[in-house]
Image (cartoon, rainbow, N blue to C red; front, side, top):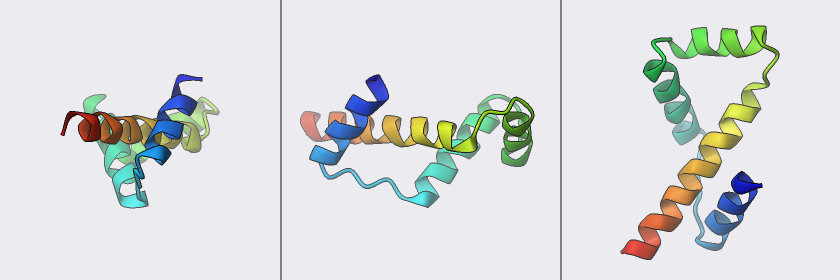
Length: 73
């Protein structure tokens, strides 16, 4: 539910999160866990976690960050 709200608020604030930003976020998460992006994708596949799940979480977080920055500006 929280991610849905983040996305809704991001849409209201016209936050557009492109594929390159999602990939960069994905690489950042992988790096923080001492993996390459490809290794991280492999682990997700082994655990049967759709990559889209992580991408949606990244998109929601980035959208929310945009909302917060807009409000504070």
